[in-house]
Length: 317
Image 1 (cartoon, helix red, strand yellow):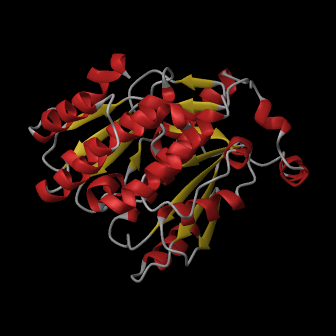
Image 2 (image 1 turned 60 degrees about the vertical axis):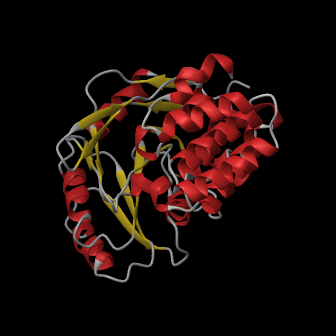
Image 3 (image 1 turned 180 degrees about the vertical axis):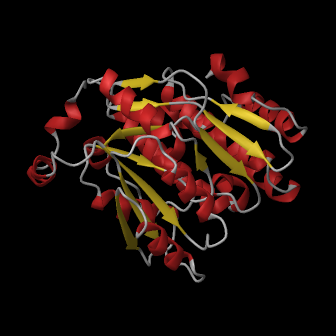
């Protein structure tokens, strides 16, 4: 289905991009909710970009602190185009979708309000776009930084993407940019998904079979992991919320990948309280015969602190 999604674009979308052909190549969309004391770090990193030919859309998601004022004050001082929007419907996906609907550049990048881009990040993305004119998605590795000073490189992977996205977050929000038209044809952000919204959208993006390119080199995105981090949705959500996201991902992957979704539920169970985890495991095992032993092993291994079980079991799945 190479470039098949372009034929599916509505006349309205095609007209919008034709009208805005003189705008910069890329827009950065940043949702913000109650980040008065944190978003300044992110915005400073955007201001420090060596590239200046880009747009920024900031979406305040009904903040109850002074975040909106911080955004407006910052926007008024920039030399590149910045738009500040508001989205009262709660949830990062709602804010991101509002931002996406306002994008008028051919490429789009989403960023989080508590993380940092190094000064060359946007220049690097633009160079990747110029050097790969047939690409639809351009990705890169990112660096996770934990409060105790530890760092961990999280890779962007171009092979086995549906599996790696589900279990390793390959389509996590900060790991790539894509053609705006691809985001639209894939259906955009689902406002009903309260967590793992980036992975759910990623499944629909990958299903379009886009041309994907990975940029090599040192990561130019630093993700700060803490209790309030936007990257910690799994730990902050209950089993029911997570399962709703998995159901939607399953709708994209299809029945043949049901065992992937069940293994993901096993990992959720292993990271939950023992009572909740055991209860979820009983439900999983009750409806599965073929993979019962595999799920039991994955649950015990992960609950005891083991890591990377999906990668270990991939040959069997």
